[in-house]
Length: 195
Length: 336
Ligand code: SF4
Ligand code: SF4
Image (tube, rainbow over all chains, first blue to last red; front, side, top):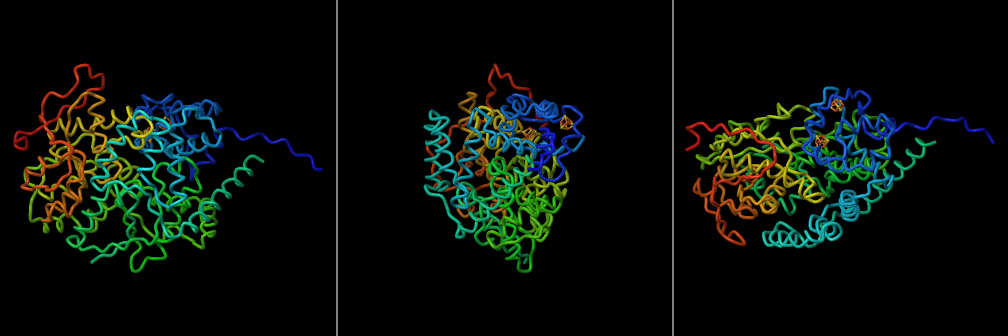
């Protein structure tokens, strides 16, 4: 047996950078705060985007992935176009979301569940399904709001703006094969990264 | 006649059906042909990429590959939804600049017998095509029912103007491409200060109060600027501002009533089409009082109750703790 050379585990910063396509420029952040100041959700986030980036550099993986910040990002891209260092902030927020799902760290599950429900419709049918998404999600997380949502849903049905059933593409098998392969590749890349 | 590959996206099949109907109604006026990408799949919205990265890119890769295979004299893909547009454009871009991602996406696509070389197709938003390829002058020539006197708030939302990789819209924060299109229809376009602010995105599902505040800012601004109607170009924006306006009103004890329509519906009206053909009348907030201003009557509208709107009444809550918005600067001549 060959001895395994002791390797330094990758820092959280490196993991986030590796998980974001292209050059995220995360390490270029100068902590100016422009992102948080531009963010419509910052007020409701546990930590502003700037704080999140400081915490990533401080290797506070657990706290970052437990926070609601990435899930409260509405993908408005204001931070991204205003950042003087051109950090790809919105893309990094997406990276943090799937890292949190993977590590199973985000406790208030409403947001990841919404994403997961959405994904299950897409994977099974090739199309998303607004009615199923809203009701399944509301049933689980906001049963009281479901009454209001149902009333609105009914009006949407009567106006021909909602379906009872999801649409389906023809080549669902092909799509599933592609997604399955993509997941396998991603999993093996992660194994390499850890090794 | 210019041909385009067309990616409608899931919303246009249902909740945003009026967007599709109105686009189909005006495509001859605009002299464009739209070839729907055969068997396209969902773009994943903002949710798929939150769960998994590579599958999200492969999902969009399939659409790009199908489009490339079908490109018959055209390599431009038109998407009317801002989220679809950005997902497709982003996938093509990141596959171009990130060779590892490109290899992995193509590895996945091969499992379905597909391949995509990034850059083969160009992804553009419908507004971009209408403004840059068809042009303001051609639009003006088609107007037979000018929207004179109709005060319209032009609303862009986020993902069309940001990040705007190819700088097609001039400004990521204060563009005026849509303003110009609406002006060409004869409408009075208000100088809408929050034209590129967020509609709330998926927060209507995750944490409604957060979304309500974002919706309130937009509706409040449209109301303050005395807009009769708000024109949008994205199904998500339309849904949030229209279907959740009532909930927002309940949440803040306000009674705003700003109808939300697609810019293509206003184009259709100005080009002389009938409201039914354009899918008008399917809104949750009644657009009839606004459209009556330009002599358009929407018949057969299903509505739970007849709206009694006291326009321009004092709607702001007394204890409103939110930041004050810039006061509207309404010039005498257009306040008529
Ligand atoms: S705007 Fe850019 S540089 Fe400034 S704190 Fe945010 S990420 Fe860092
Ligand atoms: S993209 Fe997300 S993090 Fe950036 S300003 Fe918008 S909501 Fe905030």
